[in-house]
Length: 623
Image: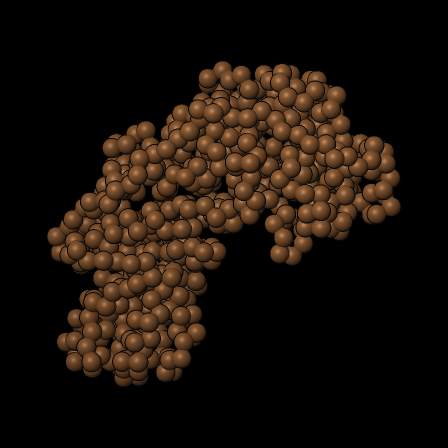
């Protein structure tokens, strides 16, 4: 095996332990014991098996190293020191300090970090997405190595990842489980029962290798075996290790998770570990021929719809995604086994090599999308909007990772009808608005949906589109533009008495309400607030000025965090005349019924909107 000799690798392992202790003690916080347990395995991996050009972290052929147990960041940063990309001074003075890049858990602030980790159970799922890209889209020989903690093996997302890795025969994915038997508050569920871990991993279709994680020669042999794929299965390496390894006072002792050693103990530990070292290491490089360059995207020819034609926005999403896929070879799609409802099946039929079925595993769907985005692909992931809530933490962490991906949730609100509340997304706008740097879109017709799908492909960060189950009239001609952050004023006049604001199904209700009000001699302005975040503050302010602060906001969503919250926040931050805001939303637990019955019961149908507007214009007029 080429690379550093094993005697020196053993010394490197000790160096990684020493530096993990030094860094965490200097910071006054961190997880040295969790780093010490995995130091030998990582020393062998980095010195002899990880194919990586540390001077070119974006090289296509580089292996990927993901610390799923992100709390072991002292170990990762000590590796960076050993390979020469982080100085000893930065390790000692920059770890966990304000304004520094060596944060408590790894983030892509560092160019050698693919995804932010630290929320346990996520690194391996992200690795599945990266491995999908390598095997199916790029046909590159890089491997994805994910260091997992034994505590996170209790997370269901780990098993979703192994299930999908087996389904897609990701033999380029290698999970290394650091089985040190201790979690935060005490022993883990299975402790050192490697046979139990093995049975579970094998049941999910993985090839399992076991090793004493402190036997350098054995670790080297197992990593070499893991590098030799069988073409069918991901590999799980179960490494039996000792938490706090190398310092007898704390080895295999409870109560030391997430605690730096006090300076006096740190000094004793460093002495027992053989003192400070400054070994430098560079392991094998990736193949020089490993390179992937997709074709450059062209301008998409979006589908066109005649004004007045009834088309569901979920159908327009599928139509537009196919056209976008034709123009941009980087676009890929994923779905959670509902593609015949979200209409992602249109993309799957047109471009089967760029579609990944994730089945009923929404966490893994989002994680795979994030992993694909790491490799420069533009993923669109779709499912029923209600089911995205169970993937919220992956969405949150993907934003921290600064990946660019598009999420689409269909079948939103009470409008879906008789399926009942378990299927009704009534929290999704709030959830997605709260994501750092997110874009939240809620189109009302087919034309705007198609235009916004194209816009999402180039939008940085996490973008979310909410689509509707039912078919509604097309409102806009094909040439209409829909910039993100904009809105459309569909009815307006200098004498408007009230503004009606809606999106999706409630925009159509607002238009019907405006007709009713016009019959009563009350002119109403109607705004299509298709961009919920960022919101078009200027158009809202202009409406307030014309209609003397009288606004009706109607949304098929809970009252908290959605359209009404977006409007109120935008206007409260502006210097506007006093607001008279009627906020119509789903405030009670809905049940089954027809869409019309449910919209009426929630008070967000055209009659309810018109009544609220009359009350604003002529208080006490509703009867």
